Image (cartoon, rainbow, N blue to C red; front, side, top):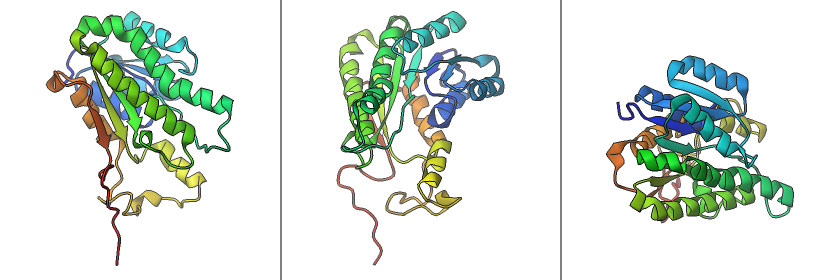
Length: 257
């Protein structure tokens, strides 16, 4: 039990990577504040996890939501030992389609909300000498041509992680960051279907993008999160981990012939 008696907030945890992290946290002995916007889906997850989980429905695009999420965790569990900033808006946009409204919403969800979550949770994380894990993206480095606003927001999140790790290290509050690659979440599966891929497309992935032959799953990411939320990863802070199936720097795509 790597997280025995710890209380963890996982934003965006009613589906995908967040749900996998929440489930794994409970399996490792933690109690978890489940967060999302879908009441029914969140309630079903809480029923699956039992008394170790509590649901708070809110939209992190609202600047006041982080304070409400932290307050819900404190009211129900009385302490906070870890925070996973996972909630994100994955939006397709390029320089032509990125208008002010889209950009501001993307930054509010993907960069401002994690900052405000840390700010709201910090007094409690100081008390517990807690751990923060921010879920970013390899798009933070340059990004795909159709993900301008998203990529910029993930670059900002990576900077936030490094900044807060530096500032909070003397207080023994740790901040580590995942730059996640292509992950087969339910939302990603559906998105690719709307973009023209056929049913069960994930069973035969492009080897240049998935050299192992098996797509990375939310559960794979969750296994990494447990280590960085646990005491086993002390005293390390400020790490940016690229959770992808190939090197981001010096990559040599697989070629046939």
